Length: 584
Image (tube, rainbow, N blue to C red; front, side, top):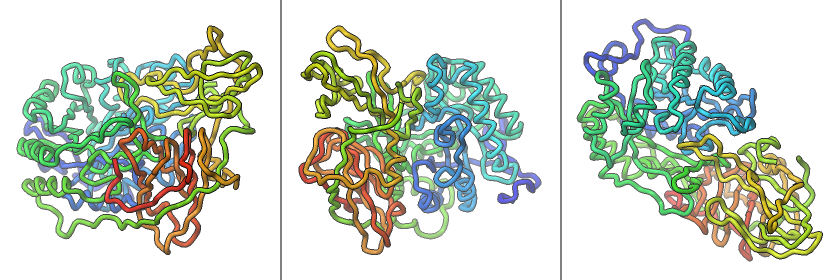
């Protein structure tokens, strides 16, 4: 019936039992032990592998976000194919006998670019995101009008495997506290999905978060990690849900990493001990993350905590399954805890995916980023979305300069948000100043209502405001996908933004590996046209990029393109080596 959802089986139901403080599945008492996985952070070729490992770990459910900006890159343009095929992923989850807790937003956080909200919303500069602002609601309603009908056939009572659906996400952490906004969303979800589906919210365990994040008609759940007292955390949930199941919707098995900070870890023993206490209380739990995956391309977001904190390409999260989907010691400890409360599936845990060291890859051809361009002010005003690295701004100076980046196409330095706000350079009358503006990810958590990218404030030369910029959007992903840059001069070290190209073959295999970046500074890497993500080894903590074997060809030449934004080594090359995990 799952593949033919119109034939809903009789007595198939999932609901809340407020008398016995539990969920009821098909009328019987039910408790889920779930783990988070993001289909948008895992190559489709590996979806089944990761899900099977989760099933063999003893989970009976998975929790899934749906990022709006991943599926509607431009207003009214929708993409649910290939690595964005949400329904294919849901069907695969069902085939492995796993249930789904779905979190469709419209805001999801997830350490994802702008928390999953599409950047084109910011074409209206005064828009108030996550409120009853009419422009925002119009876009939300249109999106949910496309998404929710796709979800409805997959609801459990319709023959699918979705047992509950979250409305918004951690809204109590947002400054607006707009109850009318939440009421609007509740009405949309009910109208589209019906009265039978369990709708819920989740928020942190503080009074303010729960006050602004909860709403009558939405079942309130909490999220907390092993550092918190389990009993006290659930007591806060009980203030808003005196009856019904105890639920931790995000039990943190690890944590994210920021560029320039130490790699974050959580003790496997502490994670396991706290998990056992949660399960001993009869509570439902979702482990966030169970497998983190990778922020390919430009999808990594940023936090703002006493400054701008961009998030690394790796979303390994110190999770039970590594970035490459390999079982860790933490997984086996968690699996042992789960076995005390329910029977584990028979059979062995699937092994790690095969890895191979492909050796050094030279990138002998270089093409400078400055030169003839085509195009037309701030990223979205020129149609620039997150799927482009940035924009080039060019100005002919009329006096000596106190600014940035390039003078007469010579690299001068880099300005950085919240770190470096001025560079001294010298020029002459008539010299040309170029600025390359890079997006490092829009803020995904907190007051992320106006994280515009581009030149959003004036640039001054002495006391004069510089104007009349010529601005060129750089649609780099599309260019690389069409075999650009063309063959250029040989490279021997270079300062400033430039593309480096090289090729390599594999010995008839296409297995996972890791790209090591000795001597490089900061930029992006593409293999066979696919954007692996940002590298920044001089800042760290991440030192390698995960290379899924599914991106490689075992029978044809593989092409490696590198965009170095600052300074390349004298002998530019990469090393594709074997590690059991991304080096952080």
